[in-house]
Length: 185
Image 1 (cartoon, one colour):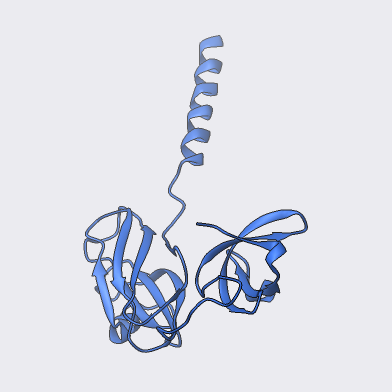
Image 2: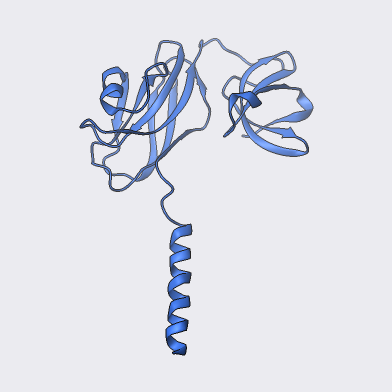
């Protein structure tokens, strides 16, 4: 009986360890979110190994409704197949047209589902740094109540920088001064 109890404990430990390292779902992320027309964009991704070889990531205008691969396929301006890769990077050229765009991952090219997305902006190639030295899209760290949080620059004016906290909704966007911001590079 003692061996059975020990075996049960080992089995439970194994299940807990496996669950903690389990696949967390499809995800797409970028190093920054603002680009000039034609600028190279490195897209990082994780995907299920069960996806077909024709699972793909494409660039779609943000105003197009999310969810259906067939809709994304109709409006994509560029795409690349994942070819059964469950993680990695892809490099795309930013669209020439300025505005808000999405990278969208689709589980197959055969009327599948959109499974992940991330939004980015294409602005004027002449966007330069404000006197704060921060450029639109630059990754930064911002101090809030004594703790540094990852963020990225939305715009800069004088020594003030308007930022978006990564992983938080737009209601947290704010202007910050040079005492609360540092480069994340």
